[in-house]
Structures are given as C-alpha cells and as structure tokens.
Image 1 (cartoon, one colour):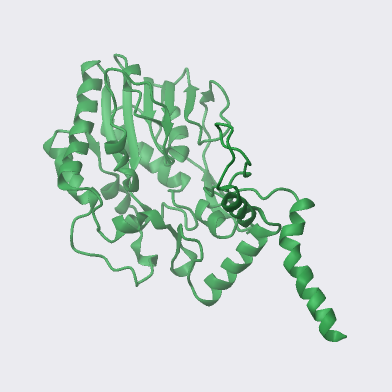
Image 2 (tube, rainbow, N blue to C red; image 1 turned 135 degrees about the vertical axis):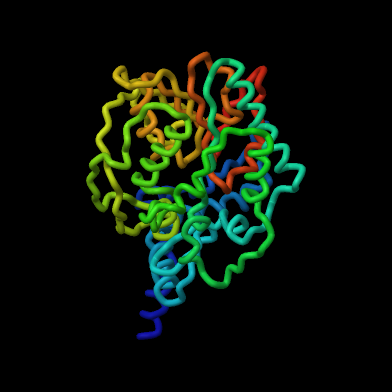
Length: 359
C-alpha cells in the first residue's frame, strides 16, 4: 500500500509543473530573458507549421508552473554549495560578485575584431566627429568599461587572461591616431577609491554615473553641476540585472545612491530603457545635448540632463547624427563589450532612417 502512495505522490509532483499552467498566472521573463512564444498551428503564409511540436516543447519548457521558483532554488543550491552559476549569461564570482558572461572574451583579452575591423571602427568614429563639428557641434566619444575590466579581483581564477591586446586595447591608440576627442573612462574610473559598479549588476552605480558625468563635462570644458560633491542618500533599493537572471524569484536588494535633480521629462518615459527620451531644464547653463547611448546611459542620462536646457537621449542605431545643429553637444557612449556594434551599425551620415535598439 505504501508503494502505491509513494507512486501516486511522485506522479502528482511530476504533474504540478504542467497542470499548474492551467491555474497559475503566466510565467514572466526575468531580466533580459526571452521566453518562447505561444506556438501556432499555421505559418504566416497560412500553411501548416511543421515545427509546431518543437515550438510547443520550447514553450512548455519556458512556461511551466513554478518555473521561476525552481530556477531560483537550483541557483541558490549551486552558488552556495558549488560556487558556480547555472545561468549561462551569469558568471558567479567571489564574495557574491556577479559578472555578465558576454564580457568574458574582453576579460581574457581575446580580440573578436580583426585589426582591419578595429581600424574601420576608429575611422567611423572620426567621421562622426568630423560630421558633427562641420555642423558647429561639440563632440566627445567615450567607452564605459566592462565591470570585470575595472574589478577583476572577484572573477573566478579558472578564467585565465592572455597578454594579447583585446578589442579596446587595439582601438584606443587608433582613436588618438585619428584625432578623436575621446574621454578615457577606463583611466578615470580606475583611479577612484570608491567601488563604482554594482555587485549584482552589470552596470555602474548611480555614484559611478555621477562621477562619469563630471568627467565628461570637464572633458568638454562645459559648465556643469559637480555631482562629485553633491549630497545623496543611499538605500537598499536596487535589484541587479544579473541577480534577476540568476535568482528570478530572489528578494535581495543592493545599495544604490539617489541624487536630487531639477530637470523634467518632455514625456514621462516608460522606463530608462526607452529608445527615445527627451528632457528640458530651462535654468541649465548649456544648450542642446544629443546623447547616443546604450544601457549605461540609464543611470548617466539624468545627470547630463541637469546641465542642458534640452536633451535628446537615444538608443537608436545607427546614431541619428543628422539631427545635430550648430551649438549642440554630442556625446556618444558605448560599453566595451558592444564595440563591434559600431561596425555592424555604422551611421549613414547622409540618410539615417533605421531605428534598431541595441542592449
């Protein structure tokens, strides 16, 4: 009798993930995760979908009941007992530090771009600068360092680094060769005594973004708010993107800084990830800003918006440089791991119509 009870209990447990899909709310994606869509019996052209069974398998694998809870429990066990991450996009480091797996090639100095491609990128940036300056605008280009480029000490020791130059090391001297106005955040941030990146996130803290703002404005020679000396409060409010990938149902929050600002949004954005954000600040000391940015601009743009009467903050690629007017300030920010995007999405300085968002 007891074997029947155990068998029934086992079968019931096996049924919970699939049967629970009928009763529990739909599973939501965690962080940058992309869940399989609902399969369709027919293709867009009206024919039968021959891959419907494979698509149904992928859909169930991504949406079964209590999936996020099970993923979180599995990650907690593996990180605590084995000090390793079961999430392919997350590297589990020492002291609970998390790193984005897409930065591993940069960390190990494995160049993914050829010498010719790196030179083409440098030439493209120089052409962007020439284009903006010909229109009477001021231009600066900057690269946000990968987290493990600044804080490698928590990376697992099994990831060895070579002595060969990576993409950034190959690009930097070419920027000088082509006369690009480059604001070197690698050197500036590495000289700071504070930890300026989040432990459970792939990005800098608000404090790091504030100091980056000061450095960029100093590089441009423009009047600005000195956020390095501005007061701020700190609260445990931030849910790291890497933490959410690893522990989708985790509840941990990380300390984050909050500064007071006076600028206004022309239209309240849905989130800091919006492709287009516009701000206004009538009392600011500078005119118009065009900030071409990626996700590192989420924290950076509020500080820059404080110093410009009008600001356009865009994730559009190719960059919409045809919007540039006389007297504008143009800042192009890109994270180290995305340098190849400048090769994939070069700006059409005569006719820009493509609007692709890049993480």
